[in-house]
Amino acid sequence: MAQAAGAPRPGAAQPHVFKLVLLGSGSVGKSSLALRYVKDDFRSILPTVGCAFFTKVVDLGAASLKFEIWDTAGQEKYHSVCHLYFRGANAALLVYDITSKESFLKAQQWLRDLERDFSPGEVVVMLVGNKTDLGAEREVTFEEGKEFAESQHLLFMEASAKTNHQVTEVFSAIGWELLRRAEREQRPAPRGDARLALGQGPAGRAKCCAR
Image (tube, rainbow, N blue to C red):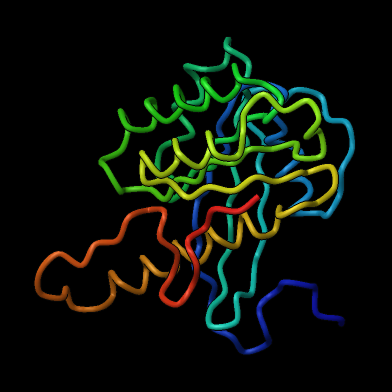
């Protein structure tokens, strides 16, 4: 049987399993990002009701991981329910639409919600500006997104689910950071404070801020 793209190699160790939640207001493209990443597909999607669930096993060379992706509803009436899906999360994507300043402000609100449920640095958080294919309608500049992410020690990228621009890179960056943390937790703690900011990628990799 042919090996699926991105699947672990035969005989490889069991993949690390990580829970990833997608957060953001309605119509920013959270479901589209997940669908593009998991199935390499893009189509018009009805608003998520409650939560949708996706899985994907990824081979990153040195190790493999399995993402359990929880895509939360962005409508305000589901906001309080979405907190239930935070539990046990290892990472979160805060998604906004670059053509909507309001969605950018909402992403900041979601970050505050996360901070009430988790200790600082407990989860890997990436800010994602979606819909770069609509650059002519942009209301949030790349610099605005990057500056906010850096001020909060978040990873940051812009992407387009429609054109598949940097979608894989978004999830891969999260994966590398999660694997780096898992590896660090298995090693004896070094002397002094060797913690790294969330925005810093794995050793030997550039910081993840890309258009």
